[in-house]
Image 1 (cartoon, rainbow, N blue to C red):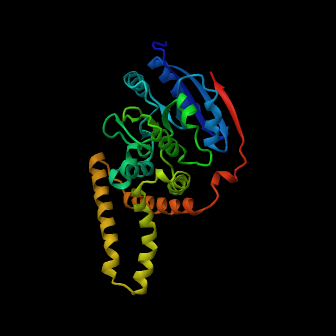
Image 2 (tube, rainbow, N blue to C red; image 1 turned 90 degrees about the horizontal axis):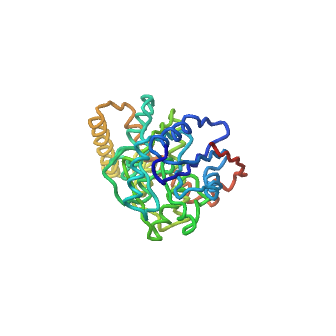
Image 3 (tube, helix red, strand yellow; image 1 turned 90 degrees about the vertical axis):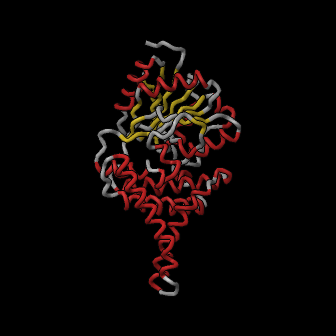
Length: 323
């Protein structure tokens, strides 16, 4: 039963072979329980950014909810959304974390432990865990698998940049804020979403996150954040450390100083996360190192590679409106 004059348009991009049934059921069930009217567009294809843009013009509702094909929407988040837009009617973007799915396995929990640690990834940790309270924020804390956007803002600032995937939401949010619009993070507006299942998939994920940030920086230099230089420095430092250490041309203790500081931070982060979660993450140190190194290498690759990855893809798509 719809109890309020509030309606959402859900956009779910996916590959043609993906299963989206669990996500669709969660949307319908949660909207019904929260008293929110909804329409759902499932758009298959080979470029999620363009797939999302194709559906924006078709949306009939004032707010568009971007989720992934494996995002599980919950009633409590929609109830909180209703309260927020009543309190902040002029807000343009609202988002929150993608919480690890309760059924994820041990390795997936290890991946999530690093991504949700402030010592490991800084503000980005708010994308994967509930942190703090409702606040104005930037793209660092928001993620496109759980993002609500007022439809009218697209007429003002434009759609998602189709040269980017991933990081299309980061560049878009930076653009929204440059127009003086309000962007909110609420830890209680969340979805459940599984982490990658294998090290190979995780490696691809983090490298592509870095590549996307590098490409975003080329498109929007003002969106660059100095903290990104930490993983970039680390990705360059590691091979340089090995070369200098083997050559013996420099004092090993001097060249090792940054490594000792890094290992101290990684150890502190590991112990802190295990104590906080009351769970032992065996793979945490390796994942911590991989995350920084891969993100740094990915950033450099995306920044210096002259062509965007999306430019090499012949776009195809199919939109289905799910009743």
